[in-house]
Length: 83
Image: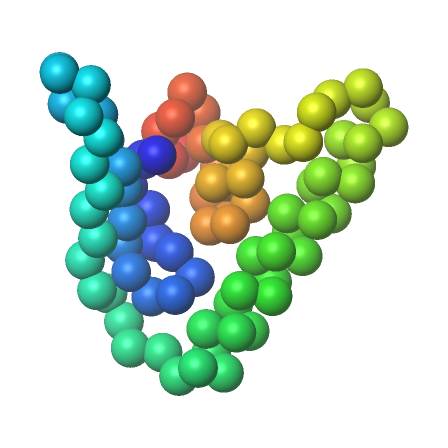
């Protein structure tokens, strides 16, 4: 998962080292109230639900992990990189 800003106020990324170990890293970016986090969470999951329902009739399985990441953050991804 490429470095990106998440709805709960952290900048977050996941990487895999040369030995296959997966690492998650986060840095706190902004303080949000519980209401602010909930508002952003609802918006992110609404984008995810809309995207999933659009794909449902196209013979696709549930959105790929990359698609979910894109929908959660609102960033466009190309080959796993933020555009």
